[in-house]
Length: 329
Image (tube, rainbow, N blue to C red; front, side):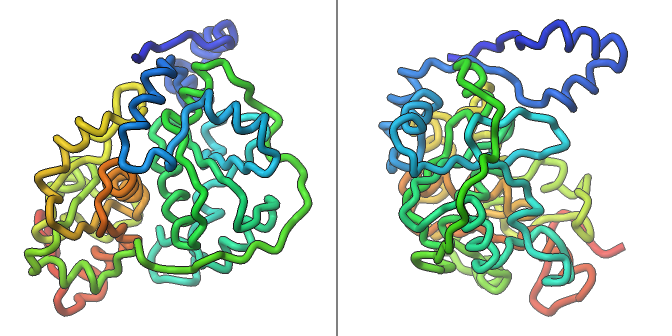
């Protein structure tokens, strides 16, 4: 189902590698091109609990031709130099994250009002069908998916395989961020039904009805490394470690429902779930998988994640906030 392909920019890449080396190639041309069997991909999605939450590159290309109200949003890091899907709009984390003055730490989502303004600028309405995508790891698309859910925007799809699979299907790129007439987007149902707060997490630690999933890398979970933005090493007590990447294939597409049930099913059966990572991005991907692929009913993404929790422990010494796999120096 997966096969790497050679970029049409091969000659330019060779020249760049000669001059600057392979790391520069990965930095500038960050989206790996992958071939995905579209028939198998579509069938896989049909087996998900909510297939309407996902789409394939070929399905998206068809929608873009047939529905002029469709809005496609790429969560793409401009520093990587990825060429966006033609006709899509591009955001990056600074666009949908909280202002620096809003919290004593970073990584939090922006407000619903700020999201409304962002969507108004790209001509969205509450009835607009929206497709989100990213490149390579795709958790940033899941973060946008989650934040749109907090607005109550119902018609949102995640592009399986993202820009990588789109490129593999040789679909058009470039000519992004079209000029459109602004709207006055009003969220249909602002809510926090998919949001975990620090208080919820603290209570869940000692409640057998809950399970907390740490979706970070092993080195973060076991306290041997600390990502920039966090205030010290460690993990939330009692958390079960399942790296979010275990839910995806080598080609970055999602695994089958059967595979994901084998990964998460016994752990979450009969439980309410909180997922967390460094700043609620990777955990948003796990939240989406548990909800939309496996049909879990009570799944919450901890927006503050390790940044907020470590700030509360290391900086504030807040009562009731403890850690494992780390400690105050």
